[in-house]
Amino acid sequence: MTVELDASLVALSLFMAFQGSYVGLHLARQIGEARGIRHRRLIASSAFSLALAIWTMHFVGMLAVGLPYAADYLVLPTLLSFLVCVLVVGVAVFVVGSAAPSRNRILLAGLFMGAGILAMHYLGMVALHSRMHMTHDAALTAASAAIGVGAAGMALWLCFGDGAPRSVPGSAALLAFGISAMHYTAMSGTAFHMHELAAPDGQPALSPGLLAIVVSVVAFLVSGLFLLTLVPMPPEAAPAGTAPAEEPEAIAPSGAVQTTAEPVAAPDPAAAPQPLRYPAALPVEREGLKRSLDTARLVAVQAQAHYTQLFDGEEVWFCPLTISEVEARLDPAVFARVHRSHIVHLDRIATLRRSGDAGEASLATRVPYRVPVARSRTRWLKTQLQSRLVAAS
Image (cartoon, rainbow, N blue to C red; front, side, top):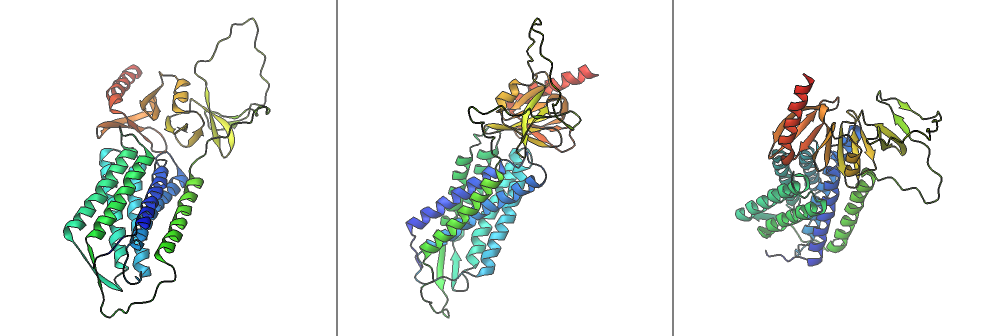
């Protein structure tokens, strides 16, 4: 039986694949530096958003198929296809987001994500077997599998790979294209045969177009909710003309919070000013409170768009400064920028090993922490560590 596709629903399926992929990859980029409950929430929400993108694209894509009779979707296979997709894609998100994304990790994550796309498609097709029988062309099935795995791997490399542009919109567009191309390639090799005993029903309560819009709106709202609740927001600038804010709390090297309550003595006018080249603290925020983190506690810095995340060996702190601004406030004899988005305390590096074409440094901290090292900085960093080891002995 030949089928026709509704062009408007095909376009809608492509858009839903893109928006869900964008939210899922955007959240996955934050997994590596998150800790505790936020780490688990980011993995779960990223996996759910990506699986929702795959499932919604498949569902709307199936509604775009103009079958001459109403199609009934069995509830259990439809639900199972989504749950399996969440689980498999969740493994991919965990693999690529929880540690420095090496080439092997990206390859493994791409295989898992591609498997999740395939599992969602063919388990979802089982939901139609109550009304019709389907046969699949072997060559096009293999081609759809190659497209799904290949596009997933390329999208993850573009988003996480060392030396890659790390563009979330570009990665989402590539992943959306892969999901859609896999689906429509597989559909082009699928033949539908109506069961002889299945009597055709009347028109469904909702037309395919209206049902597709309802499903897409719900998926869009769910993805938007994840994006709004889990993406950290930068601090708001104080309005012009307002009184200066109170002095922030200082986090002492011991971890205790101290307030600057005592007045500071006025400087001696006769004394020559001695500007502090490297400030002893950096501004951070936690739960809406402005504080400062002693640089003696600082272990690593990671860039996050126009702000940074500071790691003190146990916790991650939000800092409103860019990575270039943070780097300018740190002593280069102690801290080094080993990657375009990472700064590390040289004395806290425990091991340095190769990871694909680049390197990866493990830090001596209570909470396990790894930092990617750019290929151009690997040899330099190894020399620095050897020099510091000789000087300390």
